[in-house]
Amino acid sequence: GATEPVSLSPEEEEQLELDHFRHVALCFKFYQQHALSRVIRARESFRQLPKAHQARVSTLVSKLKTISQEAIRGNNTLVEHILKTLPPFADFGEPREKKTPTEFDMDKVYTTIKQFYRDWSAEGQAERDASYGRIIAVVEDLYKDVDVDKRGDIAILSPGAGLGRLAWEFAHQGFSSQGNEWSAYMLFASNYVLNELAKKPLSVKVYPFAHMYCNNLSSEHQLLPVQIPDVDPGAIPKTATFSMSAGDFLQAYTEADQYDVIASAFFVDTARNIIAYIERMYDILKPGGHLINFGPLLYHFDDNLEAPSIELTWHELREVLITTGFLLKTEETGLSSTYIAHPESMLTSTYNCVFFVCQKPSA
Image (cartoon, rainbow, N blue to C red; front, side, top):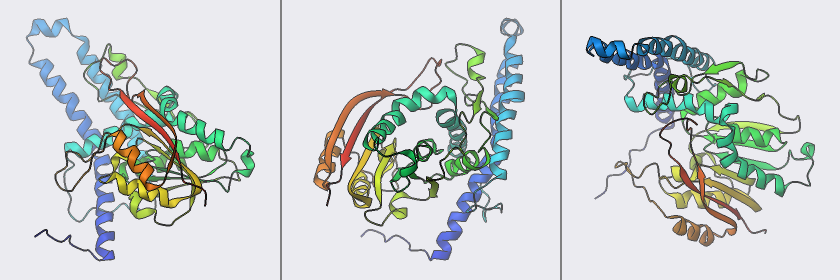
């Protein structure tokens, strides 16, 4: 028969969570060493070239020096600031079992650094417009007759909030906005930008593509710096509320009829069971409330053998929305969007996304 999942006491659960947060902090601390090891490898490869070949690409040495001394060092300063301002739920202790960060762990650190480009730089605006922009436009249209200072009672939830930009946009427009995020990497970084960089627009330099060694037209593209944040994260009307919640969406949100809008961007496909997500979204929306979604169906667990994962097509998902009870108001497919793409890269992945707006029937 199937093995029963091991049930842990609340204390053990809490300790495991704390160990995880401490491990993530350890991964951030390991950033500079890990990033520099890639530069060292490139330098060693260069030294093994025949002297005649070295002479023909002699600029490579100065480029690698700039990557290590400017880009990686600059990013490490950002990482150190993130670690100095850890959110209250994480502490500075060592994990009980100190594990060396894996390549998978470090990839998450690199992705978090790149996420600043998508969420908080002027250069990421085009990407935000393609995804967040559509969702924001629907919300603006729904509540165009409500003055900004009267929107504080309208509750909007943004699950899979990443570094919090979409959730911030709603708060900035006067709504009661909450972002929800499961990834500790993202939570650490969003806590930094939203709390520490309030009233400090354009105060921090980030090199989001410092780790991109392939498909560059020129060295400048790998060394592209961006200034963050492009707006003041503290610019929220007094009548609005803004918060970020940490944890798994299904565990964090169980109370029915709480939200007027759920704004989901690149989120629903993070589910192991997308039907459970849709049913929960339906439950926690107030009668008459809206679910607005933009993104692909890149099921995050489809290659994970440790737990079940179901992968529905858009047509199957649409049927689930309708049988759950939603009224499908808008449906657009084939909307192209990138995700943290360097504008000049010789390789870009483009998603052909689905955008839909559903309404929970009024009581």
